Length: 487
Image 1 (cartoon, rainbow, N blue to C red):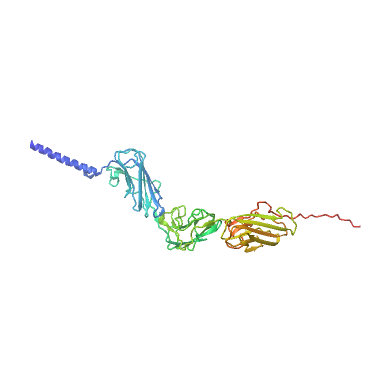
Image 2 (image 1 turned 180 degrees about the vertical axis):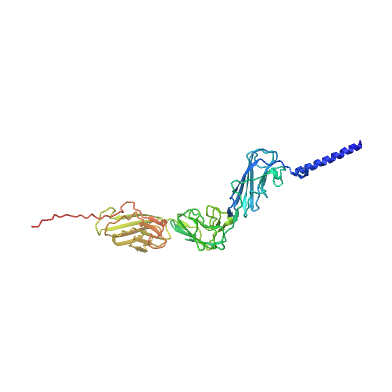
């Protein structure tokens, strides 16, 4: 009896030991004799999208993202994990995973091969996996890759790497946008930007400003090269020219927004000259330094450096510090009235004396010279001109030729300026006011002329009482005498 009992116990121990081995092997995905067993692959289809797309060349630091959309057509008892190969040159990683039928992933891991796991049981539906980060260098192809799979996660470890091949389905890329991306480098460039008029100046509206950026590329590069300057919306009537000693004229350029010029790669070492100019409509800011004022490897479309990563940009420099803001100077603080004798519209004869009296009131002092100028009709001869001011004395210079003018050197006090121009009529005389030559101006170059001043320094002379106008000559009459017959 004892012998039979011991025999039964021995067989029980052997059976339990065999069962334990089976349990261990099953947990490892193996059956008796080391045969691999699995829970079956998920009933899943997928599509992976990548931005930037395969084949792109971008700057170091460019964000890259992978969006994996998995559709599960049948439920399963085990956990479901989506896993993507994670390139070591993707840093500052983020990962979010949601499902239309199973909510957010229970476990998210963005290190190594990033993965998301939903604990079972799993309902059919759509699973969205979004992995992103910044490129610290070039990256390889994520699909096809042994690590880029969706799997039946039999041990709920949030990885498919320890699952049997029969529990995995490879992620797919039907539209072919997943693949290697090359990280470009910044140009080996130095630069100098010059500005005329220099930063810190006070100018009038309409003043022409010019920026000249000289860029030296020490070594050639395969990528395109672009030079770009900060956008200043208060610069109008823009022009842009770009040339290179070694690479010819720019292949693409734009003077709108942040003006830029681009030379297609490959680009050889040499000097690149970028000249941007326009008219100042209002006060403008500093162009250098500014995040938009750069030379860059232009790796992407559209052209220019605005859409490039910081890793492919080099800031434009201003070693001599002539680049800077321009303040806007107001026009002269003047009002005026012009009177004419004889009055406009009169019919006059040859030799009639005509007099124009312009009374200008300066309501505020100014540092610059002030010039009063009137349209001078070519049919006015024997000209005379006198100019005095209640607060600034007699004009320091005057000219009766062309458009007669008087100038008072600055600084000037506020007060009244009286300008009297006269002469004799030698033919029909046109209207003097309004006329673009009949103005009072801030004479910035002391030329005793307003013709060379910008619009912002000019104020039109006025004729409130309407007595200024053309002077007409009488019509000649032809008298026909009868012819007498001769005897």
